[in-house]
Image (cartoon, rainbow, N blue to C red; front, top):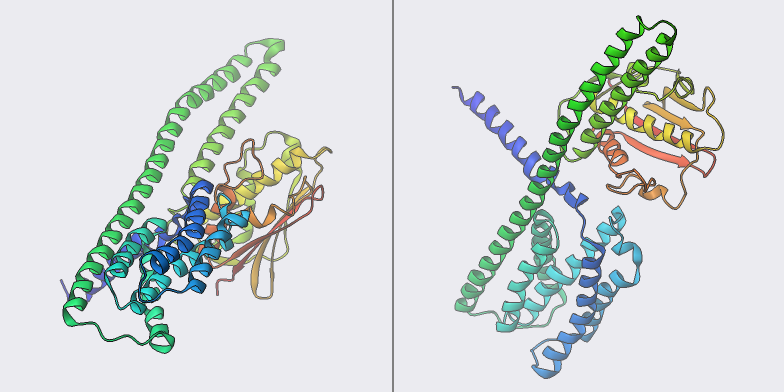
Length: 431
């Protein structure tokens, strides 16, 4: 085997490992901390920092303590209690970023600064070591690793620039600190990876269970389909009642098709973090027309309300199957919104337009349904957040956003209550 082949094979394996084990799992904040846990962290931070100032500053004085820094750390923890959006479940992207920033400041940055200022004494060696174990349990191990490296580095720069003057550590103290800190960091890393893998295994088990349930559901559905065929065959021999039996058989087939469609959709949506990397050239007009034609409508009126307008077709790169699922999700939501409206659906109440604008491809889904509350619109693409509390699981639009972003595209919504909603997908054109 040539060196080139070995290099290509090794590079491919490395890229696959990095994608599956490092990049994709970073999206695991789909399993967000609970509201109670965030508030408990906020309470312990806001109370703990002033408390330890009293311990290390008054009761058991340490060489360097700062009331200003302690109060600032406490205020950051208090933010988790004062601002409800920071403890919302699941949090918004802004809230997740603020949560990450708060604990980056209050843990690796602050503890590194205090360790350097206090000359790495016994108290701060123990505290600094414990920080690694705490930090790796608070967030994803990848974020914690980056946070520790950047926190220690920035604290070291600040200490050398504006920190107090302290003598250099003796060699034996440096070596002792390296051993203790390395052990604590390594154990924090191992526990963090273990927790992350456990969460992923739980999610994989859930997806596997869904697959088994789907298989079990398809068995009686297949039986119903056979019954529908039998009813249709019997209708030819039933004289006056044949028309009614024909309708019954057709209705059974439609019900089976709809239920199989829903099973496929829910399984696809649940695989939010397992999108395949395969890409191909996709014609937008054909994609939309096929999705509209394949959708299992509940009635002829529902089918007639959907219209497709191709202003200009375009090609883009992505997964045909995944983007068909995206259109399917948006179509389902729009039809559900129309069904909830007070007026009966009319042709054109759901319009899907395909075109281009400013060198970008556009697919616009415009419905005249009940619309979306403006207060909810910023969160509709978050995993597990649903405007339909009765039946929605909150994965459909999150799935859509991930698929579109994987093709370097964007999706946005514009809506007013009782005025319908407009979902706009923009995608880079394939040269």
